Image (tube, rainbow, N blue to C red; front, side, top):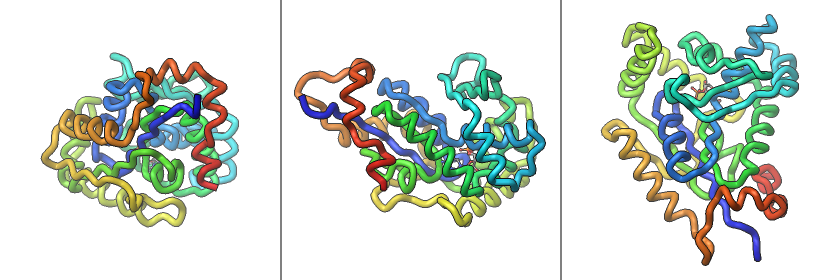
Amino acid sequence: MGHPQALQIAIDGPAGAGKSTVARKLADHLGYLYIDTGAMYRASTWLALKNDIALTDGDAIAALASNSNIQLKPADESSDGKIRVFVDGQEITHEIRTQRMSELTAGIAALGKVRVVLVEKQRELAREGFCVIDGRDIGTVVMPDAGLKVFLTASPEERARRRQKELAAQGETPDFEALLKAINERDYLDCNRAVSPLMRAVDAVELITDNMTIDDVVLELERLAKEAFQPSPEPVNPRAQEREATSYQEMPSAQEAST
Ligand code: DC
């Protein structure tokens, strides 16, 4: 038998475009692994705060992130639909989702050394083969050979409305104008940082989701995934394939393919 077929779906886009909800649902429907890379940057911010490290000290934060076990586990009823995040066994799912953590993490994500460490961890997780992975630089840097690349976006106003709802569900009551300003500031930081700025890959499909529900978006992505994935002659069960570990080791990793 030749190499097993795998589909890696890269979803990039600005804050509040609905990436993580859509990516998680899509992964659930397809039975793929979901990798929320933003959660890994948030976990690194948490590590820096916990260890009293200056948030500008890229070397120290990169070393901490490298030596820590950042685990992503499937969402459950305790986690409001977000994946559960653990650092060295300690659950930080809720702590990393506050508005303050969002703002601080934009700065951490601009540190090149931290990115190198996290990109490596992301590629390691993606070696599974079948995965949905979301972030800002997935289609451009982390997995330039992903079988399907999507750039998910929405207007800043729509994204601020969505964020307001999300924070309200967590008991926060932010002002709309303040949120809009924060979204525009994060967009600016994410798009203008020197390393791996948020950018649409040339071969990504762009979806503007202002007038789409989450389910509309998931349905459209399932359609695109079906188009992108050419199944083997025999029916393929991705999870069963995963257990054929030796076959996967023959596949070039995203990292090797990008170098
Ligand atoms: O998707 P999110 O809001 O959880 O991401 C948190 C921050 O991390 C945000 O400022 C963008 C940044 N990020 C990044 O630079 N690269 C990624 N692959 C994922 C997130």
